[in-house]
Length: 395
Image (cartoon, rainbow, N blue to C red):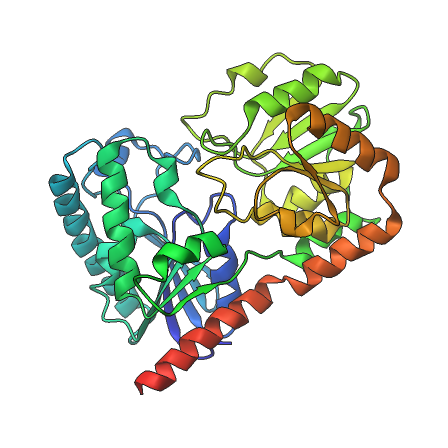
């Protein structure tokens, strides 16, 4: 484990957003190092509108938030240049200006906190032009997703391809979440390593404890409850599947816990009596919801946006021991002995019914064993080992 370093984490999601890779990694580094977590830089249009695009509903404002003794979150001011919809050359120029400004702001905050020369741990292509200006002791590019698959604008795709290659070439080490993601990046950086997503086992296994309460908004729902936890977004989330489940099995309660992206059309799921969209919930409450569910499901379409991902929720689900049903994502097939994998929407219903009917207690234990072996602590140790090895070679 890295120990005694100053680490700046450039995140792809704000600290207060649904927890994913950046928050999980940063919080595991903080007990041994000083960590500055940097929120996503927003264009000045959000300052003018005083709103947050991730749905918090208010303007955070420029400030440094102390989370714990060694852990700080920097919420940058919303003063950056918008570049969406511009020609590629102008997008690159805007990204460069934003990178210069963000690096200047972050360096100022780091100096005020007494940080020395940092290790820079970057999770987002949009931070790329800031990272290269940080005079880092070492740089890790930790890419948890294929961001280009979420874009439809041809110029934005070209920009992401360009910055992705640049980041991989400049980083000391590159981490990816799947073998498919490694393939292209390894052409740019031979120190590219696959490290799968993990689970906060201690937290999500609370779903198995008798003292964990079941929330009021699901306590009285009819069983079986088929539920999922996570962000609802248009690129991955299979709305047709959820609607199909609810309409074909009106005696089931279908429950979705998690925020919806601003561009997500939820209207097809509205007005269905047994389909419950509960919205975002604090991470502290998620085990309580998982405890209420009889079957946990992964409602991701198989498409370009999902072929290369490793669902973060998978290991979290395993920590509960409960049965899991997923669409046929390549990364999930590894666990076909303990996960029901559906090849169609009708097959999904069949797989849920099989889980309700046949799931054995020994499978619960196997899933939990898998989750314990795939902890975030272990993943951070693996990544730290690569960084320390490269730093020793350099010295």
